[in-house]
Length: 437
Ligand SMILES: Nc1nc2c(ncn2[C@@H]2O[C@H](COP(=O)(O)OP(=O)(O)OP(=O)(O)O)[C@@H](O)[C@H]2O)c(=O)[nH]1
Ligand SMILES: [K+]
Ligand SMILES: [Mg+2]
Image (spheres, rainbow, N blue to C red):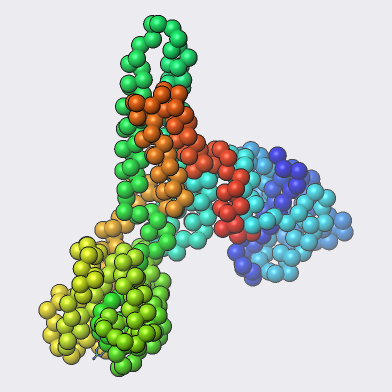
């Protein structure tokens, strides 16, 4: 339990219709007495007058809700004051709270951190909550909500308890190893169970980075020869003049990124320098970056001008078919062989192009049917866990050593959910949160 009681504005920026101030910690009951005159009944919205604790001045009126710990967001006693969302109203209440002994303003993410420390949520749930607050698309919202409700927690804790059980059986066998009548079959069963687990983890990891792409954005690179209309297309998609467009071939050199929503998903689209042979040093650097962008993209759109069709250059031929889409541009100038054609002059074909993008993105990211890991951190820990499990099933190793590999495998999962040894991670994770959360 923390000594200090913390408080902060937990609703959004002011002014707003209603503002919610949250107080959490051991001094909540005392704070309620001082500000409201009494402790409201648990978990009932109660009409209250908020008064200054020493002068008794009326500061505001609104609703108060008292959540006694441990059944609260933080696991501590929590009081919520819902008042008017004026800057001065909120300031007056925050100032009054600060004047009470034992209270201080909460740091960013401190309510969530207390929830974690009091076992109300594990790390993956907290990350889900942080993602939920940041979610901009339907795909992100759905994924973050299910993560905050514990889909990953359940999966990883289940795996961890399987490992712990396996290890207990192996340790038992080690203890009895001196005695003559030990059956060897127990450990055979354990190792086949571990092999199943390795396969489950590998399936979970091998998801085409679905969850990470939903969270971070699906990347699309626009490539083509100079003057194919790449920058014009980027501007048309963004509906603003992001990139310079001129009739001069070789206008774009730096890669230019925009973020937008396509269907249910966040997408990052990159405009690049036109590909051609050139002696211009700056343009050459631009072309190098263009090729890099193509290699890192989840989808490359190759723009072939209808009036001067261009094949994909050799250095991009390694891109797998499902990650490539060729479209004909400048459809107003000539007919194209391509199935999808666009013109940014008459804005023809843009809707068909966007629908094709949406289809491709949906195919890759799906609709959140199964739990997907959403961060590099998860991928890293699961890989480490899996490596340890693979070591543990090597029958040529000592049983003691194999048991030790199992222990390490379990620890990697424990770090993932925050069950063990994560002090160093906490600052990183909670720094993503805003004050009041
Ligand atoms: N007629 C016609 N002209 C277009 C169309 N799209 C772009 N243009 C023109 O083609 C020229 C080149 O367009 P950009 O968008 O700069 O082409 P780019 O591929 O970005 O060119 P670089 O950056 O130089 O590689 C400009 O003069 C545009 O106005 C189109 O759909 N139809
Ligand atoms: K150009
Ligand atoms: Mg350009």
